[in-house]
Length: 127
Image (cartoon, rainbow, N blue to C red; front, top):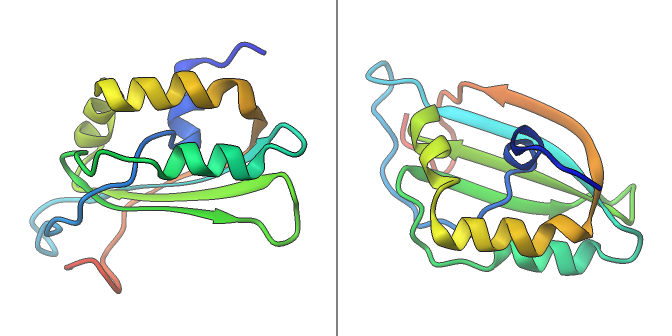
C-alpha cells in the first residue's frame, strides 16, 4: 500500500510529546488534528505502541493522544494540539518521527477520518 505524506500527516504519526505552555488565548491560533486510522487486522495494539513511543521532544506539541476505538477492533483515534501548523509540519522532519512513520506504515490499512481544528483551550491546555 502506498501512503502519501498527507495521509501520514492525517494519521498523526509521531511520538509522545512533552507538555509545553499553549499560546495565550487571542495571541495565536493553535492547530489541531483529529484522525481515525485503521490498522491491518490484528495490528492495532502494535501500531498504537509505535505511535506512543517517544523521545518527548516535539517542539510545539501541546497534546498528543492515541486512543482505541471501542466500536472497531482495528481503529485508533489520534488527537493532536500544536502551538501552530508550522510546528506540526516541522515535527514531520524529526528523525524520531521519520522512524516511527517508517515502522508504522506497514501496519496501516487506511484512514477513515481527518479533521483540522483551531483549539481554543481546555483541560491541559492554556487558553
